[in-house]
Length: 91
Image 1 (cartoon, rainbow, N blue to C red):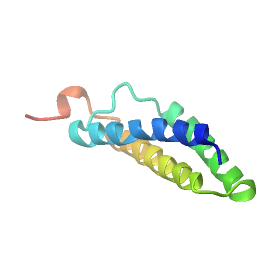
Image 2 (cartoon, rainbow, N blue to C red):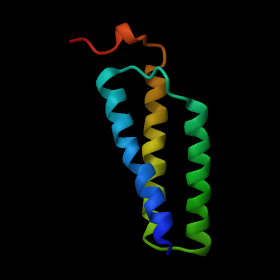
Image 3 (cartoon, one colour):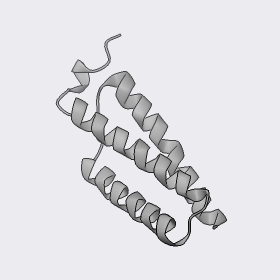
């Protein structure tokens, strides 16, 4: 187990709930990059495979959690991608 790997995954992981909440609340995804999220999904999947095959420990859960959150954010991107900022949040 690597403390630094855990810290990295926790720090990255803290940003996804905020991004997901913003998308759900405003229904606007302007400025989000689906390519970036897809690259992250590939990276988290690769890390997860490595953990499952060679180095299984509790950090495996962090890879799964981050992978799920990025996937949710990507799904929200495609759900709301055609909405303009004026069509989003109605106050």
